[in-house]
Image (cartoon, rainbow, N blue to C red; front, top):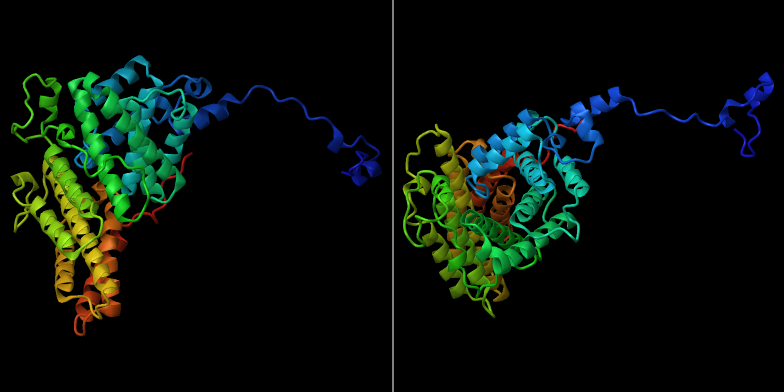
Length: 452
């Protein structure tokens, strides 16, 4: 159509009013069939999609949500025990049956879904198209990041789950990951200093658990060279923040029968493993709290990291002949054992490479023999761990375990370039084995089920 609004050539030839300059007819109400189809693909009802009322149906169908929650407690809960299963599942069931769901709880469930979907891409076909992006859209829609939103444990757990999911979807350098992890740290510091004493016993324990998980994430980021908001200083007292190593059943009693410092049966608790993980990162942070780094300081902390995994309870101890994983409980503790072992090896490897840097700064021509031997020991232990358990155990640990393996393997590249004569063959063979396992474990190339 000409820019001056006159008739186009075809309509001029036909001597009719130009259809291109006819005003568009006003459209009627939206097609409810299209709305229903869209809602079905999103797992919602037409009424839910039209109204702004919070409802679990905005995430997915109830069946899909139940699948995701089940996978969370079977796969992820062993290394991130931040929910009380009975309380959480009861609230979900009540929200579904009554249709009464608060926006904060909706976002908490959505954040669990986001973390599960991001952590278990091999199982994405079971999640009905639920994606990280969809859960983030709900968080924005219901104003998770509104300045007027109160700092609560529920909101902090939501932020933690979303930041964990984002670190799986992207990496630690992504702006959203940095921002969300920083907000988690700020929220945790606020709750610990201003709200902890006023919380119920159950909420106190959950807060302490997520505190140490966030601390572990920050230390890992620091080991990778990422600047993060500091949650804990090396001189901070930590004893009051260590969660009790109790089961969910004991946690339900409200603390009336529990005493700090006492031992409790570990029939259904993953908190012993969480506390061991915290001690590993406390060792690493302690190793960095020195004005001028030294070989002696690093070697001392390597020995301390090795001692952390000594004397563990039976369910967290590696046995020379591991029996095949059979029950959910055995699987869960195997997930914890792998997480602890790989983390310990990562800490040792990181401290070894700092020793290697000092050796280079001192203009040593070759990497000292002791560093090479310890590096080979770390790699051998890692390979033994990688090849003795099924990949599902590593899937349950999430993507965070992959960069740790890659970090340990990267030290072998340095050895291939500068190592002593006769040792490059061993380093090359070990590196090939690590790369083969990384290819199997790294699921970032997997295409997730798209949102309908």
